[in-house]
Amino acid sequence: MRSIAHLNALRAFEATARHQSFSLAAQELNVTPAAVGQLVRTLEDWLGSPLFVRSTSGRARLVTTEVAEQALPDIRAGLERLAAGLERLRTGSAGGVLTVTVSPAFAAKWLLPRIERFQAAWPETDLRLDTSLKPVDFVAQRIDVGVRYGRGQWPGLAAEKLMDEEVYPVCAPALLAKATLQVPDDLRGQVLIHDQSVDTSTGFASWQAWLRHAGVQGVPTDRGLRINNSAAVLQAAIDGQGVALARSVMAHDDLAAGRLVRLFPQVRLESTLAYYVVYRPECIAQPKVAAFRDWLLREAHGPA
Image 1 (cartoon, one colour):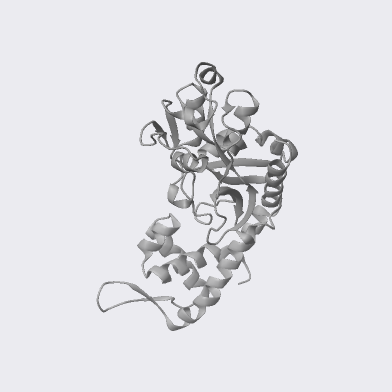
Image 2 (image 1 turned 90 degrees about the horizontal axis):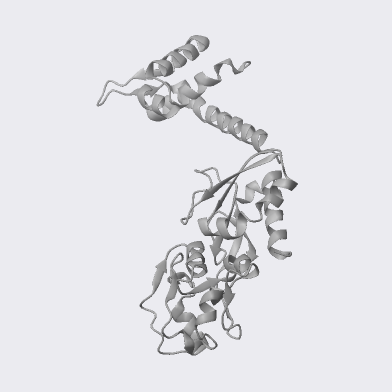
């Protein structure tokens, strides 16, 4: 077609052919059925031949003519290539909006305290954080890049390890000052704060696993404070509400600032899970995605 004047008409024709209905096509295109009908008629007038006939059997529906049916594959391929070209134009520079998915706790305890350094290096990129505990559909929700916690395998996504993690007990300095907490057996009588943000069936370490690793028996783990957000777990410990089983990545800044104290450093338990930067393989060529991936790796492997 020599002009893009009929581009909207082609979209209306393709949607109508797929749905066999002006009304359903209109819902998809977010216009009125009358507008879809008018676009199709404009295309028919330009071509000088009809594109649809009314079905006379069963429910009323629109059926493409033989010539129109033969043309549909090329039209669909052309529309898909146009959409891909527009997306390439939209994402072809480091500027624009970069949508990042992370858990609420990771955002609060690790990413946000550091994000100013990325913004200073890439001021033309506007960040949009999508914080969720559940995996999201990168395509449907137009996610550019994310950080996930697990074993490094997510269908359809490339994953690069960002940080390993250790699990250990922590408490507030004020609690340590008034309680005897020199060896793991001293946890008897303390309120244990449980992190339930990750299912233990995935390999996430629990108090039971840590105590077993430390060779401690008789400490009740069926009671205590249970929270499904790692940042809130640490805050409860900072507030002196008990002893938390902390994740090292989440607790790093609080330990460095003296808000928390690590207990029993002689007991080391490495998590079987780790943090990964994830993205669709075809998107890493986008400058803004590559820039954020590289920045995350530098932050994780450099001084925190």
